[in-house]
Image (tube, rainbow, N blue to C red; front, side, top):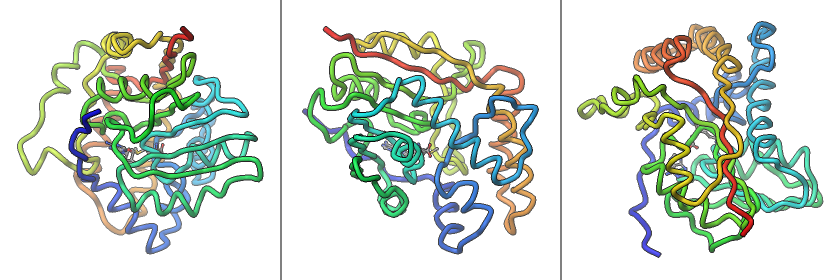
Length: 284
Ligand SMILES: C[S@@+](CC[C@H](N)C(=O)[O-])C[C@H]1O[C@@H](n2cnc3c(N)ncnc32)[C@H](O)[C@@H]1O
C-alpha cells in the first residue's frame, strides 16, 4: 500500500487551546479540555449556556455519533481524529469489554488523550499518531470506525472513506459527524483564499461536500448508507455559548470571530447543515 505524505498539523485553534490548557484557563479547560467539537442539545430552547451545560452537550454529541454507529459492548473501535480522546472517554465510561483505539495527526493532542482516558478494568485503550487518509492498520480489524467533526480537515474525504472501508470488518459501521453544505453554496465552499489567509483560525477546512455527493463517495467505496440525521438545530446553542466565552477571553481572535459568525449565519439560514451519517460495510 502506498502512503500519501503525512500532512503537517496546521490548526491554529489547537495551538490556542493547548496554550490555554497549559495555562490552566478554567473556561477553556471545562469547555474544550475533553471534546473539541460543537455540542448537541436534544432541546435547544432549554440550553442554559453554562460551562457545565456545554460540557454535557459535548458529551451528548459523542453519544449521538455512537448511537448512529450502534456502538455496544465487546467491540473493537477506532476513533479517527480523536482530539483529546473525549469520545473514547465517553465509550470507556459507559461500555465494557471494549478495545479502543484513537488516531490523530497531532502528537500533542495524543499526549493529553493518554492522560485523560484511563481504561476501565475490562477495556483497553491505545493511541496512535497517524493520518486518517493512510490508516496504519491492517484490513478488516475494526467493528466500528468513528470520526467526530474532523473529516473536513482531512486532505481527501474520498481517500478517508476508502480507508475506513478497508479497516472495517464486513458488517462494520463508520459513524461520523460533519458539516454538509446545501448544493446551492457547495461551489462557493470550494474557493480557497490565497496564502496566508487560506488557513485562518480553524485551519484548512473542506466543507464542500453536500449530502448526496457524500453518500455517492461512500457508496463508491462500497458502503451502504444507514443513517442520515440533520442535527443543525441541535447544535445552534453552541454559537451563543462561544460568543459568551469569547467575551470573557483576554485576547480577541478576530479571524475566529469572523469564521465562527460565518458558520453560524450559514447554519441558521440552513445553507450549511451539521449531519450525523452512518455507513455500513456489507456483511458479504
Ligand atoms: C474539531 S477536532 C475534533 C476532535 C475530536 N474528534 C473531538 O470530537 O473532540 C478535529 C481533529 O481532527 C484531527 N485531524 C486533522 N487532520 C487529521 C488527519 N489528516 N488525520 C488524523 N487526524 C486529523 C485534528 O488534529 C483534530 O484532533
